[in-house]
Image 1 (tube, rainbow, N blue to C red):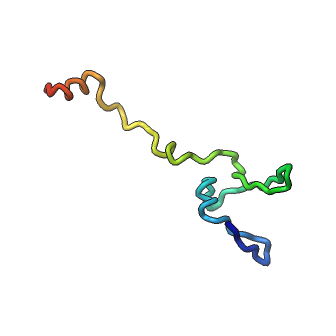
Image 2: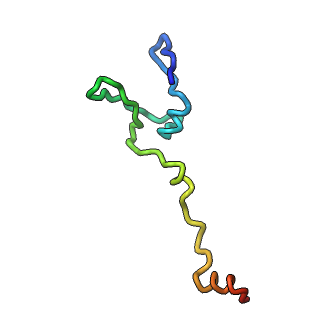
Image 3: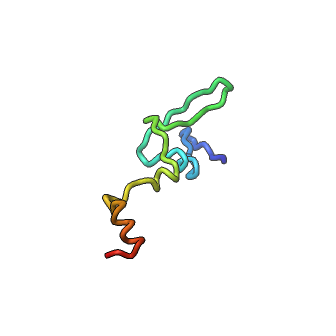
Length: 77
């Protein structure tokens, strides 16, 4: 991915990169120079973005206990 630098030295972070890092409007980012000379962009809050699977993880509530589930599978009232 590439982007163009404006006359003010600004760039737009491509949407796939923003989505991958979980960067939202108003958030701060950091630039770090790696040992090999490359520049690395990270979120300033150092939080890792939730994976697509973690976003789906959760709990639906108290739900049914084991006895209730067994009664349903047996057709009991």
